[in-house]
Length: 590
Image (cartoon, rainbow, N blue to C red):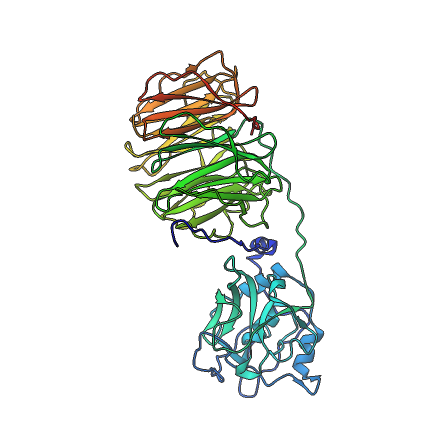
């Protein structure tokens, strides 16, 4: 896409039924209660609950991978259902959407052959028998010509499609076919993921809407007995204590030599200020003053597409984003799927290996969810990273460009810090606890030292001491938790940044006395004692740190007791400056 043009995003809703289906993945289907196995045609036999030998794929129109491969003669003649059709209709039972998807999924790994004269658990092994099974109709199932006329299903519109509905070509024999709808595959609703039984087998795959070209006319239908899943409102995870996430988010753009800071005002409007090439900071500007946010924003810079992206959680719980291409104006706030609500502020990182911006936040169910945008294209659907794992606070992300690994950390509701990762934009690993003997609170922070080849994560333990754990690139396991200079105690979570100018990791946190303390490790060496920065100045909320490579400086941003934002800086490890006020706005304490 052109560097300065970003497509309008229209994320698709992800149905709650898909989440519920995970709990049904082990469902084992038997014969429908009270329904006898149908007698196979002469010359064939089948034991109850087992498949018969595959029959010839009569009616296959030449492409065995797509479309129908034949069915019995139409079951509805002159308005009267045949005996098998009447049995299927009479035994139809209510089915939830998640149950229909789980029943369809149960056939995908069985290796069944397509044959309208073979049966599995009483259902015909063809497209309409397969969907009849998923919809919990009676055995042996209806055919494509009879779903709607019999009253089992009714026509609906594209916009009404939900998981467990279907796309139907109501032709007869090999001219008919039906696909069970799972979910939309893209934001524009141009393709979907569906379950279908074709002559090449049972598939769960992406299909262009309404179906592959040249295979007839397909329209959406709904089983009149299907019901929406009733999802109890999950308990919200413990609230993050005030001050455990940064009041501001900061970024340095090496291409324009501009430092930028973002914070959510006490009025809920996102404020923005900037400094060009270490010059004076601008006044505060509002980005989308009609929009209201809560928590803390996240920001990242994509150096390939030359775009800065900002993310924030709306007062409605939806994650929104905005973007600025170099030399352009900020766009409009856009929702990243209004079907999802979040309990935490988002966190973001740029993945150099895949030219991807990765975004993670905690849902109202306490689980971590991930989305991404590659090459500044539309955002992927939200993906849960195991709904059974529950977290609190705000997750932390860092990227290791040497190994292509993105590292994710989150504080479990049990106080253990958990870690997951992906390499080169691939699948995420399972969550693993880091040293369960140490319990932490609040939100972690993580960085990568590209010269010493080490990733480090920091968190405040329940005793108030800041701890860290590390992993060198030539190691396979994270170290245990190590306290940074006991007996220092801190009131909130630490923050960290890698200073490439000095090959140092800089860490700062607010002590129990309200003073900002700082320490740094140069070249992965030992950590010196905590240093107070202007002891007479008192602050609240977690700090924000940024390294500015163009002027060899590091800056700390802190929220004062007066709810205004202050900053201090150091150049080439010189002493830190006095605190300077970025006046004109007041901001929220996380």
